[in-house]
Image 1: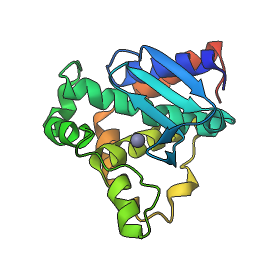
Image 2: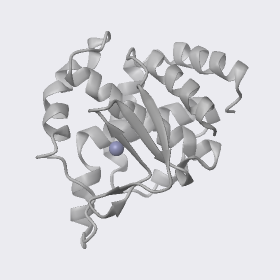
Image 3: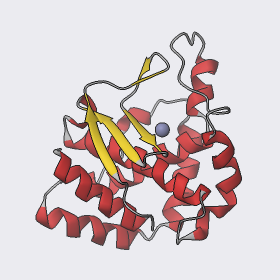
Image 4: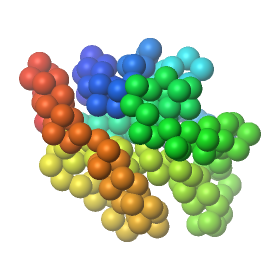
Length: 187
Ligand SMILES: [Zn+2]
């Protein structure tokens, strides 16, 4: 997906989540957080989504990566009480605590055990971002991405997916995504 399409899709996702679109989307050759490579990153200080070239080299991964980082910007809007839709305000405290750099568990380079790796992916903000990106991929591609099927975090992601899907107006989300795809197709 090119940058223009990513910006349009982020606008659509923002509309769905009742948040303002991010200030900037930036494509990088490589993203490294504390010595570990990452496909994407949301920087709340500059309200910027960073994505690697590799993460957007096909439409499927573009949607998954963008929706994931866009969801982190949504979480930030909830934390800052700037979201019109207050449905996730009960999670504000836990999201705020987890996204504080002091508490956030980074995927460390030297993680040896599954438990250590899970410390990163079991954070509520990550579960929520993964679950949201799944819903969006399901709407756009009409299928559930298979890469999570055997994942250890499966049950938590699916539990959260159900909750988000209930709150989200799926029909409206379809309409919004379709409207954006009329000008630029991401199907
Ligand atoms: Zn994330």
